[in-house]
Length: 248
Image (cartoon, rainbow, N blue to C red; front, side):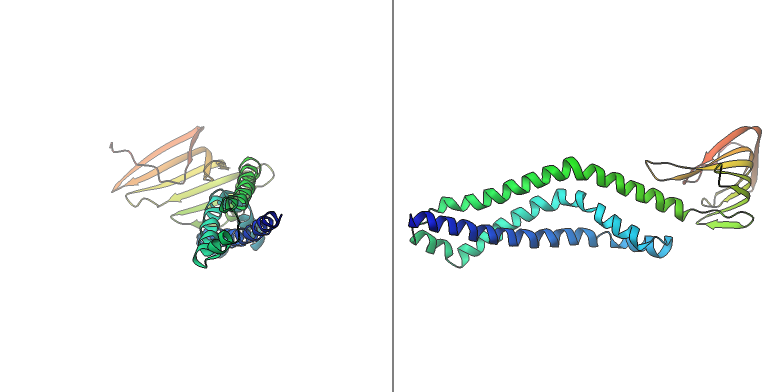
């Protein structure tokens, strides 16, 4: 009877120790992974003017992918630290002298391990997919907010200058478009088109232009190449510079 009471008290004591170290390790590991992304989040706030609310949502929705790694790491560290502390302070020797079966050490460790296993399964099967989709939606909204074109002025972006005569927000189209692409100094390009629209690639989050009834001029060295397509749709401009042809 006395041995059973000691075992029960020991199980509760060891489980509390494991749970304490597990929560501390989980908080530290998750914080480290969040801090590693603070640079990118600061760039979103400073350079793109993203709202603090969206940043906090990004941090919250980024936790389920992090928990995939931090849950087992925290359990392993908690087990090593808790059992190591018992051994270093001779508590295991005192328990053995009191008649407690040392095999009972595995009971609280197994209980916490089972709880971590269930939490990890629920996280991977339920939360992970939903959080990934939520992060995707937030980045789409950030991309749409960060890329705004005003009509009647020259809109400057890194290596690209865009002029649009009129913007139809209802039909999501533009008219009177001129694009100067200087990202590749060896091959500068100028696009001019009567109409066009902006598309967002949901997989890569790249923005591209689809231009209609336009012309393209390329400067390669001292040569100028001109191509016009008054009735066909010109290829869409991507985020990477288009390579110039080598022919004359």
